[in-house]
Length: 144
Image (cartoon, rainbow, N blue to C red; front, side, top):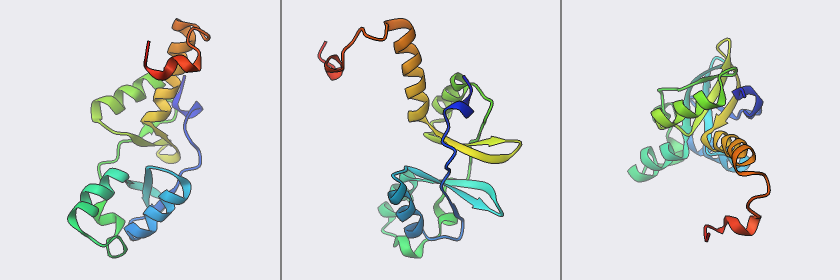
């Protein structure tokens, strides 16, 4: 199971000189928790909901007056498109990231989230080890 099978190919991006207001409106429009920041067509960072809260809102900054490049996460963790889902999940866990751009030959080809990986692993575990019909949806309430 390779990351490229489960990544989203429709990556939403913004430029480092876009305002936080512009980027967050785009994030809201597409119901996404992060946006890849690019410069000259290459990913240089990521802006997440966590960045918004900690680096803008908590510091009483006006999103219209702050550039993404000033508050984005600059240490960009990327995942190779042909990496296994298991290794990608381990990287997410060890480095405490929730979203990562997917690259192939250093080109941005997608994005994958911790939630995407969890769904894949859960379906594989649930379907393979527990049996597909062991729990009916009503049983997923947490009251076993």
